[in-house]
Image 1 (cartoon, rainbow, N blue to C red):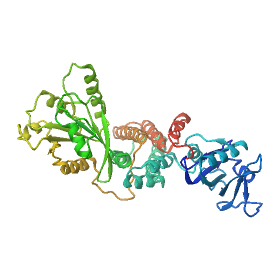
Image 2 (cartoon, one colour):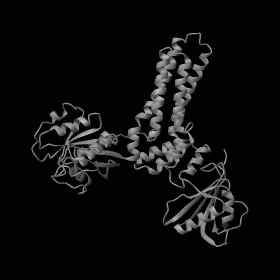
Image 3 (tube, rainbow, N blue to C red):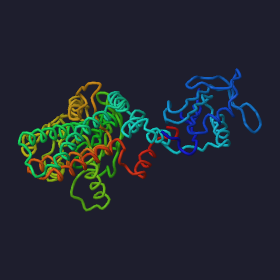
Image 4 (cartoon, rainbow, N blue to C red):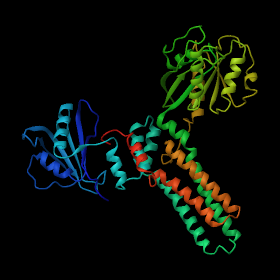
Length: 461
């Protein structure tokens, strides 16, 4: 474990007025700078690591007292970054914080870049990249389940799961490479089957992790619900009804909604982003066409789609267009609006080409049927499913890409093994799988990508 070449400093708490502000220093000169700016209430020659001391921060230029503080020194390697670290607990006024940052930078520290403290912890092997990313997930979690899962990843649940897969692959790889020395002999059928089964088990672990992404991301970020339908079926009225307020303009004029209107509610403890969209129809209006094109782009990112139909009017070509454009989307609810009026068509007609659609009848005007709709949205999103507190799940698209590529190489390696390919070929597949798996922990990522990942952190973290 080695120190970075310089010492960094930053405010670790939010800017603004508050009772306490915490200024953090990390690097080889942290303790020296602390001794020069801190005057303890009781004179001391040495500060013990991980103990709080009361005193004043003084200006090294004038000797004037800047603030009364508590100071803690943490000697390497037993600190968050693995370097000598100092935390100054001062009063939370912007002027005080700026003044203290000024004196520590005057003595040789520099202001940190976003995420630089956590990056140093990663580079000093205090935590792997999956745990470093979990820190940001803990901070940004929007649900209790998302927070619990993020804390588990911070504690190393994902790192342990990938390490388990990695160890199994290394064992298989060692066996394959040992057999290369005896390549003129046929591999016994029993050994071939056993190795293929072990590869299949690794593939199963990877596939299970991938299967957790959708619900894990929803728990972490919330649910995105897209409201789609032809003009004047009640999309904006439905948005207003779900919100309980008049957010979207409702008129009988087709094409009133030209752009997205996004608002948030909570369903079953999960934040839900409701997105009202432009009405879908064949149109010669250039602006309206652009709005419709953007609906199809948004469709890919939606967790649940509400297809809204007007039950008081016959189904037409525009309704069929909406059905056709959403046929590849699984989490779709057919919302049949205006149940307060006579239904002009049979619901089975709507479902004959889409038997998996769940029809829910509502009246956006009179706010009936909304509880059934919310329950179905919650069911499709998986928010009603309970999971053990120690469940490992992924929420990061970078992890999805790495695991997907891992699965591809494992599948190819298994198939090559069963097809009787030489162990050298199968070994290449497994090495490629290991490289992808190592990207999750940051073992094989280039510096530029690491910089981009840590730049998403706040300054001071």
